[in-house]
Amino acid sequence: MTLNDRIFGVLMIVLAVAYGWGASQLPEPFGGSEGVGPDTFPLLLAVVLSLAGLYMVVQPDPDNAWPWSRTGIELIIAVVVLVLYAMLLQPLGFIFSTILVVGTLCWRMGSAPIRAFVTATIAGVVVFLLFGFALDLSLPLGVLSFMEVG
Image 1 (cartoon, helix red, strand yellow):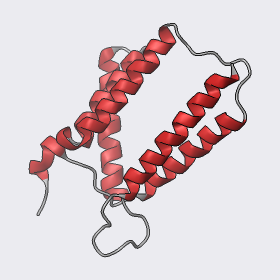
Image 2 (cartoon, rainbow, N blue to C red; image 1 turned 180 degrees about the vertical axis):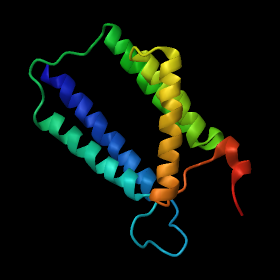
Image 3 (cartoon, one colour; image 1 turned 45 degrees about the horizontal axis):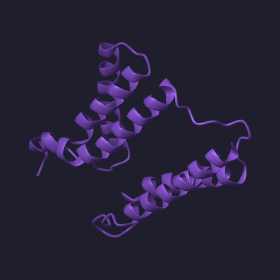
Image 4 (cartoon, helix red, strand yellow; image 1 turned 60 degrees about the vertical axis):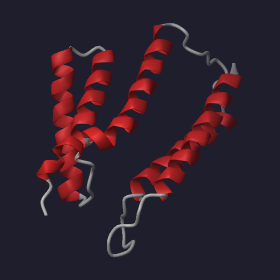
């Protein structure tokens, strides 16, 4: 069953290359590229993802099998939810799309729906504030764009 890991590893490498290329297409911030820009974190994720994929290709698990049971269905749901996240990020904004995605994934992992979405709301707002104030990086506001200053 080592072929499963190798196939998945190759898919991860392809995804990392596409993700890294997409990150490299982000516009440079005003004033040049001094230090951390909007492409830094996505490029770092692409490198980590490609290294993990390469590891799976080179060193596959000999006892691995595809999870065709309920776990496989949950993985498919998670992938669909994450693709929807990427599609909803600009129109809805970071906070609302993160609430929907994190809340849904927490709920699918067994959390009560109210608790899942309260956790998602806290996480979305805290990460938004962290990026905006601590890291000085802007995230899409989407439907909250009326709050933009200036």
